[in-house]
Image (cartoon, rainbow, N blue to C red; front, side, top):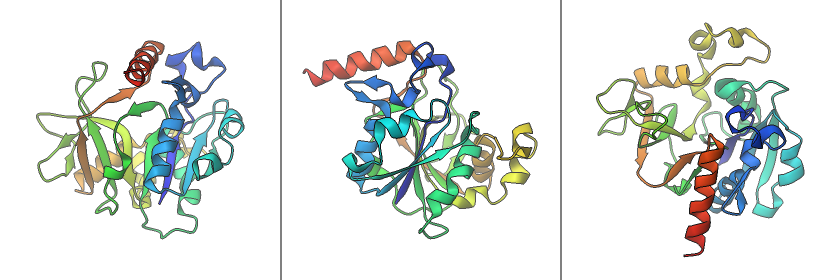
Length: 242
C-alpha cells in the first residue's frame, strides 16, 4: 500500500513559527509532526509515501531524505509556489500513487499537521466505495462537525449528531472520476494545474452512498496554532517522563 501525506500548506495560522519551517516539520514530543506519521506508516508495512509540498518545499527532502531511515521510499509531489488545496493536491499526486499499482488500489492519506494516538492498522485494508474517513469528536474550534456516521458505518452529510473529519482516511482514485463536474464552480478548478478542495467530492460520494467511516475516540489534535502546538508538546513530554 502507498500513502499520501499533505504537507503543502502555508501554515499561516502558525506564524511566526512557520515563516522558516513548514508546519509538518515542527516538533512535538521530541519528534517532527510528519515523523510521527512516518513511524506509523512504516510499522503498518506501507512501502512508499508521497509527500506533497509547496511552502519551503526544499526543506522536506533535505530533512527527511529518501525515507530509508524508516524503511520507506519517500517521493515528493511539488505543487509550485501556490498550494493546490486538498483536492488539487491529491489529484496532482495520483500519478505517483497509482504508479505500479492497480487502478482501484486504495491508498492511505494523512494530513501532515495533525497528531493522534490512532493506530493506522485499524483502517480497513479493503475499500467498498470511494473513501473511508476516520472521524473524531468535535474539537472546541470546530463544534458543529463535518459528517454524520450511521450505525451501518456509512457517512452522510446530514444527521443530528456530526463528527469531525480527522484528516486521516483511505481513498481510491475513483473519487475523482467526476471532479471537473463537481468542483467546476471553483475558480481554481479551471487553472492548470487545478486548485480545489476535496470536500465537495467527499460530499457527493456521501450522497451516493460511497463514503464509509469509523470513529476514533482516542487522542487527536489539529495542530493549527502555536498554542495548540505548545500544549501538545508539553503533554507528550510529560507522558514520556511518566
